[in-house]
Image 1 (cartoon, one colour):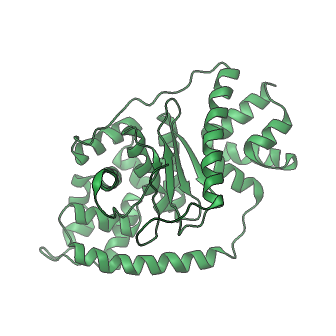
Image 2: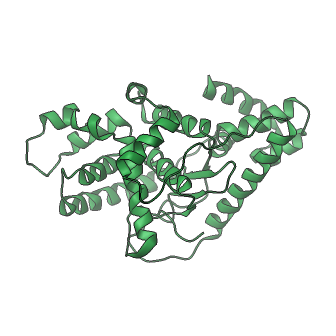
Image 3: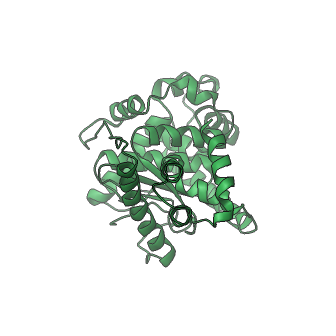
Length: 312
């Protein structure tokens, strides 16, 4: 994988064993998913859209929204950031893309990566990121997939050349998908903002974040793309965001989630359903379920229960 989306300020870093393991796991799960679809004689879903760097990012975002069949009302009715993440994730999976969450990678190293191979391309977000950050990551990786340009991606578009051009394009498509231009321009935050003022308060950014489901940084990136703020203001605010991310990572060190919740969050709805359906049809054993979902057998009933809640 030739590039990656990370929080690091600049330059290249060595790939950690943890990131290497997550990449290998994503490739394995994709191959297993294809085998499981064939085993239960179900048709493998196909991604219906594609993008080109020659496409206008705003038009490309409209195509992505059509592919995902997401409405503005649906998007704005997700009440919490966790509900919004689950909603976007289910829509992306319904479009034929597997979504996984990396659990062992430090957020400072990578926020996500993708595998563009068809069928069943893969988008991976870092579970240690905030839910709204993960939404943007999945949409960013989806843009890579539709360009047939999978890899580990860099949000901040360092340097020049084709790689930075692709990263910038994917960021713009993801931002326009999450924050449609017409809806942003008609939002209460924009209507109440002083005309010609290129600075934005935390409350204004938070209002856009809540309304559309993206992070405050993603909202500010979108305002920058729409010419409603300046690069200088964005750079200053981004320094603040980086400090907040660092504080969040410190708090997460003391966090703990039950193994079955981590397994389900990591594997995602489609892959989990394939494993459980194959087990229920006696195409695989309980030991296979343990291997595929990386849980102990005693957690199987909890996985089944929580999966039903997730997709209800």
